[in-house]
Length: 202
Image (cartoon, rainbow, N blue to C red; front, side):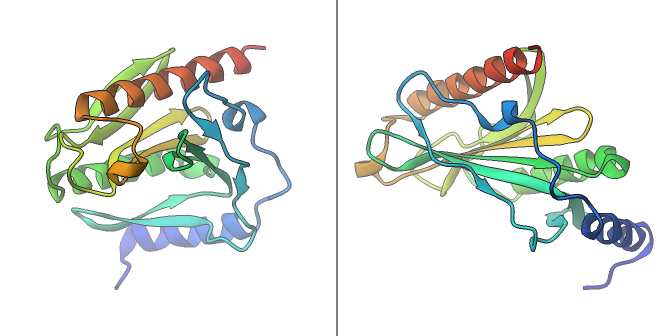
C-alpha cells in the first residue's frame, strides 16, 4: 500500500510523537472504573502494552486512515454466563491530531455501515448521554455478525471511548431479541456516561 501526501506526513508525526510519548502518564481512573449495577461484571482492565503501535490503521472509502493512540485500556464486561457482552476500549490520542483522528474514525464507521449487512441505519447515529455525544451504528438482527453494535464517545481534550457490543451464541446470550439487546446496550452506555460525568466532576 502506498501512503501519499498528508497521510504520509500524518503517519510520520504519529510515529514520532507516539514513540516519544510518556507511557507512564496515567489515564484518568474515571474512564476505567465503571461497574454496572447488575447483570454484568467488569474484568480486570488490560493495559495497552508499550510495544503496541502508536496508531490504528482503519479502512475508509478513501483508503486506510490513521488514528493515533499513546495509552489505553481494554475492559471486558461479562454476563452471568461468563461471556463478554461488552468490550470497552479507552484510548488517549495525541493532542495535535485529535480532531483529525475523530474525522478518520467516523469515516471508518461510515465505511463499515456501507459494507455491512443487517444495519439498523444507513448513517451514523448521534445520541446524547449525560452531556456526552456518542456516535455509532448497530445491527437490526441478532442472527448475524459477531458484533451487534459499535459506538464511540469523544472526551476532550484527547480521549476516545469505544463500546463494542458482542453477539453471542444462543447458549451464552443475555438477550432474547434485537429489542432486548438494544435496551441492554442503551442501559450500559447510559450507566457508563453517568458514572463518567459524576466521577470527572469530583
